[in-house]
Length: 282
Image 1: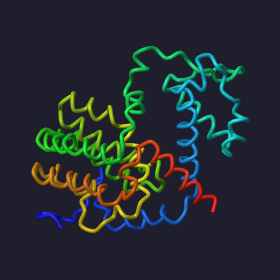
Image 2: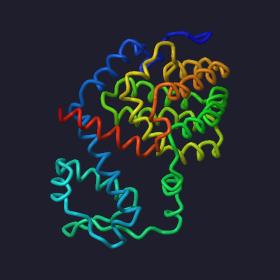
Image 3: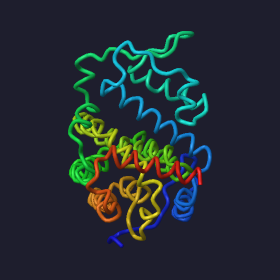
């Protein structure tokens, strides 16, 4: 266990201190044994959105093409119409499609800036899980050092809320979102817009990695610091401890991902989503 490691839960916004350390293993076990609703809905949304987005970005669906109808997508993916509508809203928010009431959903023309965006570069580069962890280590240890020194009370409150959100989440998609929100809050608190842009450029890959890690019981390895411990060090303004805990937190993946370490991040995420959906059907 790291020197100075104190197993103290962070305060809630209202001041109470729940025993988040006591509930984490149980919550992880819950996702490791089955995939109930609404977890299945969240995973289906991710799966369908990823497949349609891939089809749009690779040219399977050309600009101006009409996507299959809600009913057709519902049948194709075995999902409810509500899930399909959620996917279409997401693609519309990403400016990948235009929804015309009464006519359907049509693929939008992508401008050159969008084509050269982070996501396009990410998919062209085919980075692996190991490469993502290796890149995050120097970036996020420096971010947490600056955040510990510079965080305002508002920054602290945002980080605290993200810690609590992750501890209370009960399915992998909401867990991954809360996980990412904590790391993004640290980037904001670091006070350097370049570092924030750098983290934003890999946030899509981070989210895909977090989908797996937040449904894997091995991340509860005893003695490894997670968000509550990192947050505690930030709140105490102990920069060296915060860096030590962030480094240990990120390096955990090098021990627990096994063969997935050298698999492309997006391929690994797709395989893991399919596995969880398969467990839900079983």
